Length: 210
Image (cartoon, rainbow, N blue to C red; front, side, top):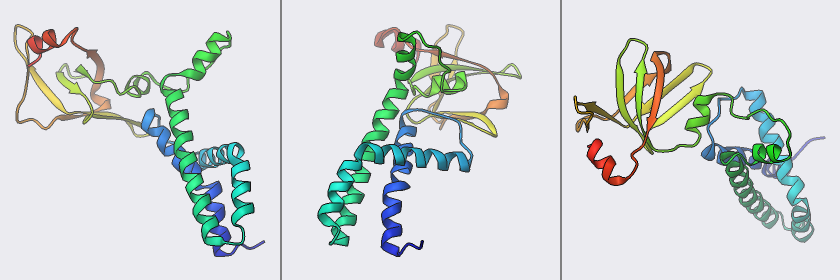
């Protein structure tokens, strides 16, 4: 069977694009290791089929109403696929962010394997702003801030982290930000451990970290 251009676009709108959009939205909520291309394509297809299974009735109604008007049909199907994919991605992403599936399984007293494979991914998937002390394998200690402009990654090539601010610490334990610094990149191979801290309140934080 051959597909003409319109049918090809239609199939892409229903079976490929929704999965891509849904998966992209999920990544905004949780961090995960990079997937190999064949596995990634399977996820796209799975999310597209899930989207279709939920909204098949709506796709059918749109098809029945606009099948004689190809342009309108394409517009309504594309709009529906886009909106539903964004919503589905947000729902799945939030449920993963707050670990709702694992909590439900624990409530039902069922064992479960955590979807996030490493402690590194688990913590940074929460994207919680905090102050960090990074201890390196050569004995160096780095004091920094992990916030919205910071970034961490866990790929097949290893782990690394970028801290948007670094600090100097005096003998009294006072943290002073380096005003001309643009942050620091740290290769995961160099990291021995990472400590996470936050002030108890704004006044304490201003007194101990300047």
